[in-house]
Image (cartoon, rainbow, N blue to C red; front, side, top):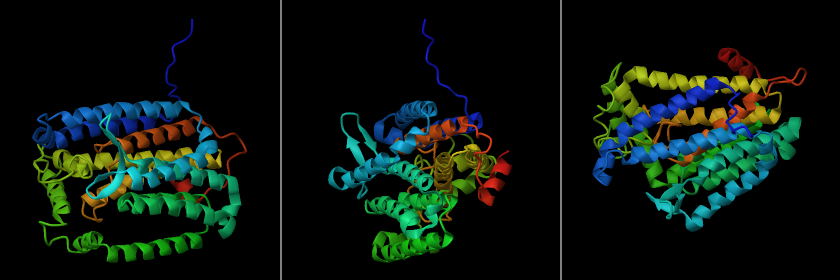
Length: 388
């Protein structure tokens, strides 16, 4: 008799528990934050919650699949995945679904779902950079033969994201790419040169695009014109402030009553702070911090350059998205439209993040063989020590 197939969870269970805890919190607060909007638009206060639960189940399925697939297969597939990601981004300019004057999604009418390819392209870019650095080794420090092709790969993806326009994802993807290149051994002067060029292009873009300029100006005048661009950041701070230390109680948010737009997506952290208080926000922040520290620990034990950089890129992706989302919610960064990983309502980001974590967990199954460990950057050693 054949034995039933069961998921092999011999991996870093602390990360698995952290991710499941974040997803459960996400289900709870999406249910609370979306109830008023769902009742007003769909005559069902649980409409968006039910859709989100289905997406969480799908995300868990992809996570478990990724845990079972040997991550070394992604090294061979990385170039193809990257090309596919670029093609899907280009396709948005032809058949993309437009929402709020941006073409970031594909719409599948038969299933009544939208797919955001930039999330997959972000993961594909991490795979490609890890593949390239593992292949080139020390040559990544050579500008023409190592760094330049990696920089071009990064610029293509980021440029296509910005052209949608999707500046928030483009910014986060740039930071993720820089992180992987830095850990992979790229020269700091090359990274500074690339960063300076991108900063110059970004400045020109901000000055030439009206709504971007308005967002930046509003950021530096956050206490003014609260009925305009500053409405969301101001209402977000109201929610966080009214929560106090322990919060108003689950389901008791007042900001979700149409005061804070996107309360169940981009600004769910504010609803968390309003209902669960400072304690709730600190717990969630700590969970993200523990996740990235465990990722650093896994990277130092992978015994494989590709696996190490893959873990750094995936862990960094989740952490960078979380930090940028929290900075926006607390008024410390201009509005970007980035979701809070595993908590915000959504589909593409949730599934891709879950699949990415599954890859990370698969890397955690590997144990370094004696003699294969290589010299690592000091900050990785410190991160690993903190995660122990």
